[in-house]
Amino acid sequence: MRNHFFISCMNFFGEETPLIIIGILLFLVYLLFRIFFSFFLETQLGKKFALRFFLKDIDKVYLPYLRHNFPFYNALSDQNKVYFERRVQEFIRLKEFIPRGGISEVTPDMKTLIAGSAIQLTFGYPAIYFKHFKRILIYPDDYYSTITRKYHKGEVNRRGLIVVSWRSLKEGFVDPADGHHLGLHEMAHALRLINIINNDEYNFYDQDTMKAFDQQAYLEMAKMARGGQKASFFRDYSSTNLEEFFAVAVEAFFECSLEFREYSPELYRLLSKILKINPIAVFQTGEVSQKRYERM
Ligand SMILES: [Zn+2]
Image (cartoon, rainbow, N blue to C red; front, top):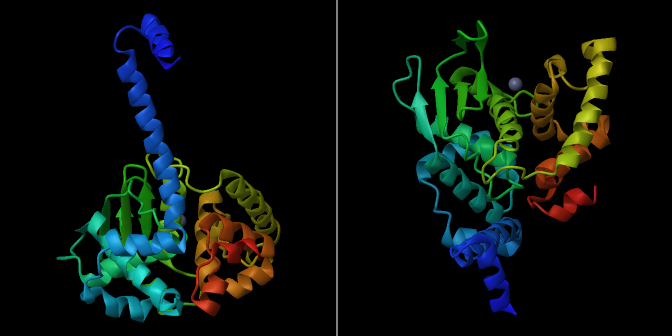
């Protein structure tokens, strides 16, 4: 039967057919393996596996900056802390950090604040490292863009660049509960962008949930258009467009979680589902359980 199938295909496509079929089958097996592996990494066993075989210990030079700047990291259980640290190390290993505009060198605190923001945002996605973004440019202060003719605190673009102002980045860490966090904000932009750029991190979050989030976002933006800043829990800048709303909501999600959930349980639930994390549960228990955000 099998031979008959191959012979029929060979008649149709020519003598190369068995190789083509083997190639397609191997590719399908590879795809299945990747899908299985990304789910596996989200389990406790998967985390242990990654810690044992893939993720290297963090360079101790970064640790004080993690401890000093990331309440989210400090709230984690011991095992999750190690996991966070090693993912930060992996993020730093994968990126090229480039000093710009008078910065003479990229220092460990710069790397830690950027990598820590990325890992906090994707802590529910163990396989996501923003692979499309290979280079991170750091300016000392807000920088002038000749394209927009404005000063920027940061940006993320499709060509694979993340750009941040070091002064504004640091400011985001001063008050951990004011809902202003440039690191999380820019990484949130990057997250939305990688989901539409076709590589192996493409399409990783649930599109329907994001659509539901965007619909709610439109309602909030309409509220702000009618009633001004005071009409919404989210700061004014979020009404710029859907991308900005998402990025501003992410800042509030981690920095003012309780107030956010009280103001809009639905937006909080949707964002938890998109990011596969519930910061309130993390701050209360130190654990990241998929069931926890599903049960909210
Ligand atoms: Zn933005």
